[in-house]
View 1 (tube, rainbow, N blue to C red):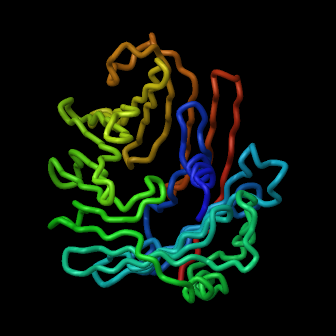
View 2: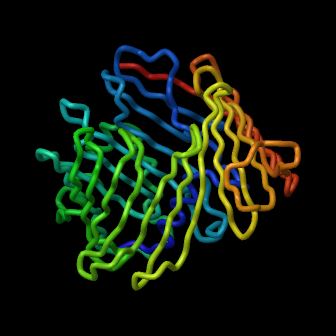
Length: 347
């Protein structure tokens, strides 16, 4: 079992946060896609940073990503944090197998079975006879794998496929193949749980409730409010012994006219606002981050009264791939620019 800290590191390394941006985060996709299978290889200063491989149906089948060593492990890790994902599909374009290689957290494969209105997730994990010390990035060497064929033929994959299979999730699906009940043995809650999901309409979750099957206690509830036009306000309520222990609220809104999206989050009396601006191809061109005192309302209009604390600017090449990212942190005065080059390989 991997530690919660490892999970936290994964989140920090792969997701943007309000006051500090994650570089090189957006998926690679081409404006004009080849009719055959192809790969996009991204380099920075001559070093491969990302690879995305697509089959002849333009389905993503392989993804490689390399990030920096997390600051708190600079003295401990010798290699960057690396991630590999691979995907296999059935005739209905549903994922049947997902490869999930994380150089720090471990190497896994998830298999998905579809039976009537059920989706069953099975987990297989790499067996390491010499159990590595946690948070040492022990699988940094996975950078040797640079394609889907190399992934499925690797010794690591062969090892995983001989391991014991564990059922992780059983999902009951609605007519849109969305989960309405998810059963699992939860490591976080230390209980077998069911997550019950209700929808406002297709693609819009209304409520999500996590209930312990052994304790028969509610563990968490998520409520989405769509009463503000083109917006959703989400409230996450955590419980212990059937009593509320914490409540967290955040919101997202879209302006279809300006092609922008804005998210809002409150923490310790400070409202943080993240404003995303997209071009006509729906590529992000700027992200602006603001702060202001929280006065009870999550969704507030953008104005000059807000304090701008950070900004990210993106520019693209003719293929629609990011060629430059520029980050400015107005709190610290830090500025950083990164430039990328690409090669496209077709088969």
